[in-house]
Image (cartoon, rainbow, N blue to C red; front, side):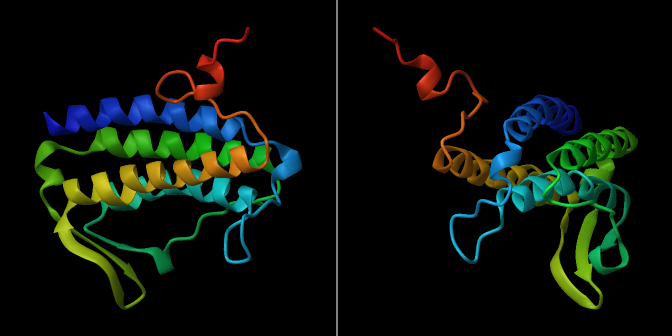
Length: 168
């Protein structure tokens, strides 16, 4: 029951993430709101990369990020980021299809080399926090970036304010 709910949410939210990434304009890929922030291109690439992490999270009991290498391309190439997103969504979908309800309760740990970064905790908690909520957090940042640069923000859960304002 939990697994089917996660799969349904995944599919719904992939469409929202796609709409948001497709709204990122090439002209603003170098924008960043502060010296310590990512550029818009780096943020878009990070969002696309999170979908890659589904595989290590769902198929391994211990995921060592230091031992896993993903070719990402240049963050200044939004087409490459959109391609990365689509490939990673397919990988994530396959990983979701490969698991069972029981595997969601198995303990999971994330490491970077010998350093434990997250866990051990039930995989179901990791899926919700490290994967789903992590994407939602960064999508919120992307919305701020888009608005700050004067770009249109797509409606993810219905129309945006700008789409709903009645023009006289």
